Length: 188
Figure (cartoon, rainbow, N blue to C red):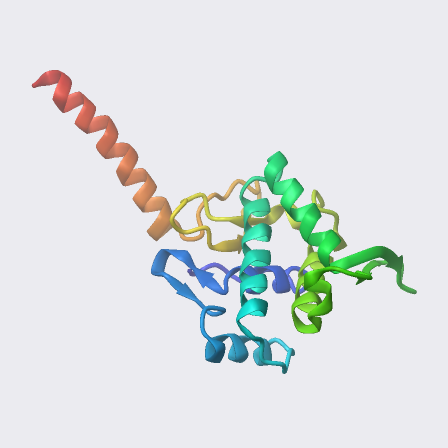
């Protein structure tokens, strides 16, 4: 995907969500070696066992589902469950920003690397507010087979596709074929 990366404050969300490349069937959390490489590259030196990798994948897809449809009751419920699983009551930092404290209990909270990663991602989403100017520009590609997360830099913030030359072109071609195929059937 060829878009410029998200601003620094949202980069953890973008990087985390894009550990899975659905269009090409890749998932950095699927194998211990690739998961360990991603963790080290993002400042988490610990390797994670299969249950923790599964928790990371589930958290990633929960955040991605929220970015696909921010007003979906199901996506909001899942995001709220994820927040409760890794975070206690928020605290105010000296600079006035909110930080999530570790949850007192819960299966994800017990696993330090997973909980730390998920808290970092959630704090990045919450920093500007889920409906804030920057956070609403973080989107998942409208192509169901893709869902690559990107930062929409269009002045009108109306981008739908991670890459207009790939996903956007496929969508336009499908729409064209649907229109011309229907016309050809009516005329024939």
